Image (spheres, rainbow, N blue to C red):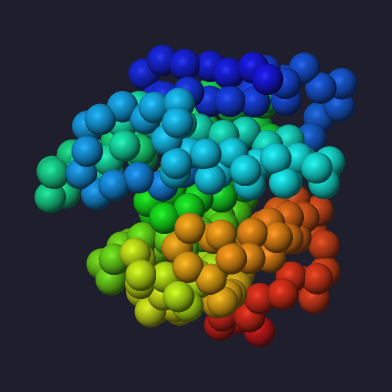
Length: 229
């Protein structure tokens, strides 16, 4: 599986997607979690990244859309109280540019876990982004929803989560419904690491990606519509 590296972290899977004989309807880009503050590099054995690698394998088995995965340069959000662009946001933006340069203006479906969910929201305004799935996301009450204008959003959270707040996710989904094209919310019986029901998380992401890429019936997505019709 090909990967690119450099100032924006490691983007895995782009070479394979670019080598396909047909243009994909969309691509899925996975964004892993991290810490609020850390400049330690993301190691090969990083658990947050490995968690998304497992999700990537499950999605690839469906053979519906190419799956890419980004590994950030460092583990932390590191916005220094809002005085600088968070490190994973910079990395994800550069990854989106690399995807567009390599594949053309193919729609991108962002799937982020924990800190990766917040990262996905921040870069959702990138022109090729069509949809965002935020899994057990870290979404503080002041997290802006404007980047999600005209995008489709799924927020999924485990009610047993003790790391990030399911209440913040519900509140964010409600606020985002004022600007997003469509917002879906799912609360699962699981914790932050998505270990109790991994198949349920995977099916949710696969069906959401199909909805975003192919316009599949929303009835196939086992999640509640927030706001809208």
